[in-house]
Amino acid sequence: MSSHTPVKSTTIERMRQVVRARLEVLRKLEKERNHILREVARYLSGKKAEHEKKIMAEMPYTPVKYE
Image 1 (cartoon, rainbow, N blue to C red):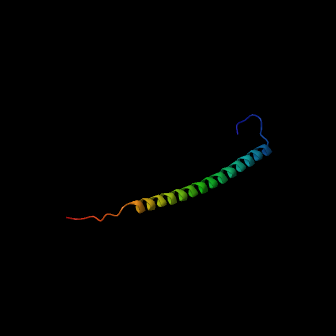
Image 2 (cartoon, rainbow, N blue to C red):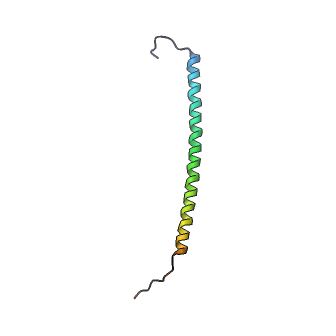
Image 3 (cartoon, one colour):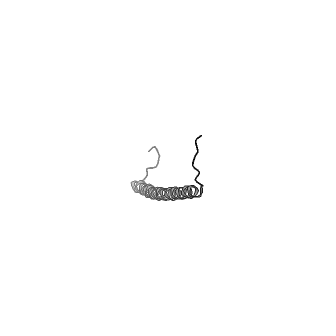
């Protein structure tokens, strides 16, 4: 460091601990976010499948006639 007043090593260590703690919080938040996104994707794909089944059930079946 090029500062004129020397920084105590305890201060640097405290700063490092704060940074580590914040990184840990960010990691946990990212894990939670990914979990939520997976749940949402699973829910939406299930809804899409339900919707497609419903549409297929409501469609009248008309055989194609070739002339």
